[in-house]
Amino acid sequence: MNKRDEFLKSQKVLRLATIGKNKTPHIAPVWYRYSGKKIYIGTNTQTQKAKNVKINKHVSFCVDVGINAPNIYGVMGQGKANLILDDIKVKNIAKKILARYFKTLENKSAKELLDETDCIIEIIPEKFSVWNY
Image (spheres, rainbow, N blue to C red):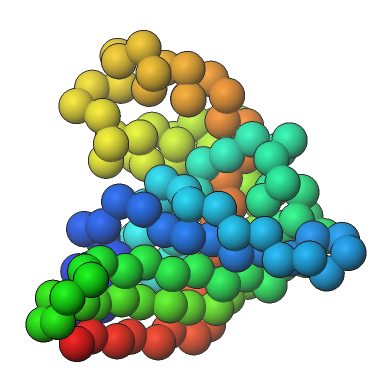
């Protein structure tokens, strides 16, 4: 596995940029899971990011760390996003995402987030940019 993929699998916050109906950018920090080929983000269909993906599939994303050289590293990318709405797929993927952030899915907050998640934003990256200093 290359450094970029290892980095994306290890980090916890991704900034997702979507475009609204008035061509207005919307950026949101999100929890995510990177499979090595796709990025998955659990959310609710009522969120702005989900509404935006429904009307415009083009997205950008950024994951980065560090403020002082030589420990600055980041990955940006662009791709196409789809909304996964099938309840069984949504819950299965959402559990994998939440397992990265909670010791157990029996945690009260984990259960609430799982209950609120009714869609998954699936990103198929088409372009990556990597930087380090």
